[in-house]
Amino acid sequence: MTQFESRKKEIEAAAAQLAVIAAEKRDGVWEPGKFLEKHPIFSVFLLDEDRTVTKAYGLHHALATDALNIAHPATLVICRNSDGGGIVRYVYRGDNQLDRAPLDEVLKALKEIPN
Image 1 (tube, helix red, strand yellow):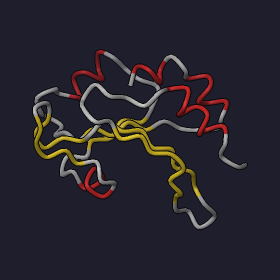
Image 2 (cartoon, helix red, strand yellow):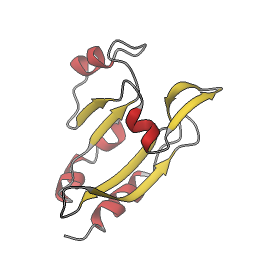
Image 3 (spheres, helix red, strand yellow):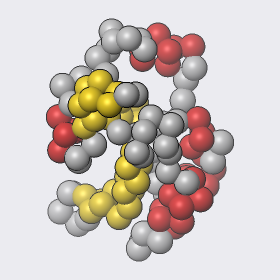
Image 4 (cartoon, helix red, strand yellow):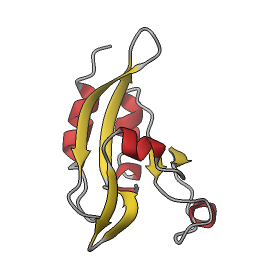
């Protein structure tokens, strides 16, 4: 999340909007509501409390040494098409909870989206 904050101007220049989705309950272990009150971010923040989105994109991480019913860290670049749906242009699925998408790679994918 913070890696993208530092590149806010580049994301906006690509006419993109960042959305963070957390596979967590509102009152879960990390208390996302309280965290965001103390540390506001420029992007939309959504909670996938029942893991519907996480599972639909194949990102659910049921059990591992560093995971229990959460999501693989992932970054997707999705652009809208003419019928209001979306086309996935880029996907990075982390192998563990510390594995994140290379930021320059994500920004390159944003810049390659046709206008």
